[in-house]
Length: 333
Image (cartoon, rainbow, N blue to C red; front, side, top):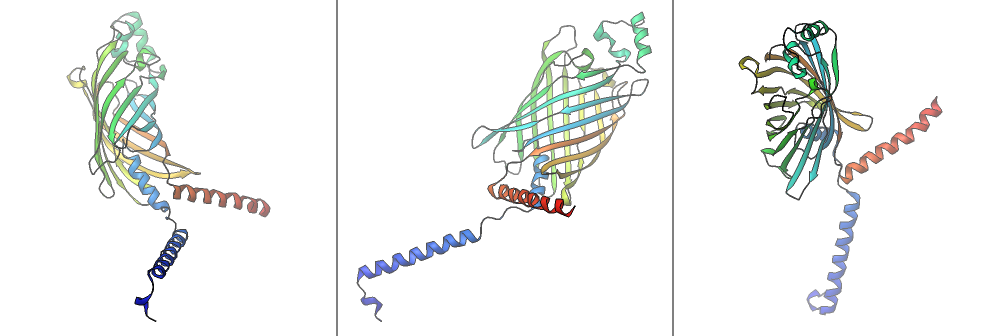
């Protein structure tokens, strides 16, 4: 057969038939090989990284309980439950706004004699001596000052991940003992790296009072939380994340609180809900007079990751399997 001798019209028909055939084959191949959903291990590892990144594009609601032991002359215990949701908002293709809002719920032992000036109680007065007597058992429970932080962070971070923005302290405490009575503001910065199984970084802020009760002390305080995490298999990780604070208004020996310690945690599921649980212990190498020499931190964080279409399909299939399995279990009973 002499192909070269075929008229141009026949060549066009042959080419169109070939193109149509290749296109149909490509569509069939796409139907047969849809994009694979990530494995559960891959999803867990991604969540490990995201939960350890303060400016990740991940909605989370951590409930962090801090118990400070052996406070004051009668070795009392202070308990602070921090409700601290983290909400990312996409401002543009290049930038995210990360809102981190901390609301403390505090169980505070009766104030020591060093704190009675907030009530106008002078030393060696009858009220002062009476306060000494109730320190053994009395306490105050309520809300502390809220601390919202707003981080501006790149939507597509590089090796060095960072966020910067203002931090505020609002005088929302329900008792004078539980708050500072001042409205404060300052800068906050977070930087971190996540090479391999590691997450290494630090969060820093400093706040100064700008308004509030004239009878309360001015605020000038610093917070530094450095964090070192190593991720293990099955969602486990080892963590070191002490919170170092400095009260620049305090006297020389009462400025610093410097914890040393660490703990473990795990990303897991409660039903279909992914959570991050962790437990840590810290001893304070430096702390103010009548402060706590050691503390325990327990946390559960509810995670709400953004799922791809493949992940949504996989979760739907898993739920359908569970629903199909339930009638079989009830019949077996």
